[in-house]
View 1: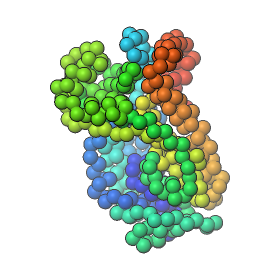
View 2: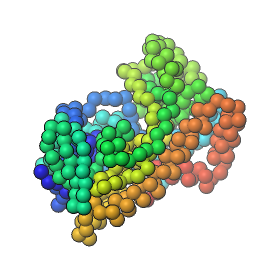
View 3: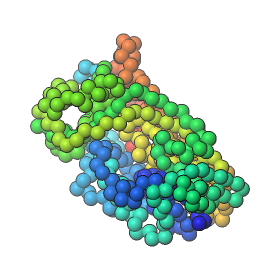
Length: 391
């Protein structure tokens, strides 16, 4: 079985790349260890993805955005960053941009369903489900992918998209910079008496981080980050206790709070691969860069990486050169690293700064917030990074 491109992992990044390449002359296959039903009908995982305008343009380009019901989409008009018990906050407003919002919130499983719906329209894509990769062997002409069920698949270019704990990345000998923050995030939705006014807020409190993402006028997604031992205590609270806690944490800004639905908890581990390609294989998605969710850049960066890679592959096809040659993959590596590394380092730096409870760090935090609020160039740069508008 011979293919031009084999994508390992049927998550959003892998399937988005498959959509992007489906109309080319390339023979594309997707290997996924789970059953087709599991990734084609994803369950609600509690996460709402903050999409930038650039991400939406990419989703439009690959034909996915039209599969997302506009009634489910929530606009973020403003963003506020608050520190500790201070009443001052860093403020970002869509009115300072040319857009009608800073971004849009879409449930994660809705994005995944929309991508899969588009994938189903491409009949020439080959799926190998319930299949796990045992090893990959590469030479000058391509790679052989050995599956645990003894099938062998040949590929010119192998794309690794099996997540931030990628076993295939390890098999290739690609190392990562890993940071375990020893924290967990818990996400859930809450109804509230007062309107959120389409404002996303990030409260950097001294024992936790609390994000409020506006879903509807009186409904928000709550994201709370706590040390692992504190997270366990939080998950053991009753609904009534959680309602009271969040209401108090927000100082009544949204009025009476009521928990709706389930709580979902995830450990916080970020990764950054030391190289994005090796031996005719290339990393995308969380296998390449696994972000902390605090700045909402994760999926947006993943899509940018997919877009960069598919552009380089299509350029190679036009020039009639090998899509997995050193120059093609090196260009992808360079472009994606220039985009992703500053954001990754800045995000991890923000997390460390705003979770350190030493007095000097509290002083620095307040000073930085005041400075960023009054320094227009700095503020404009932050908005540009939030929107990921840089090309």
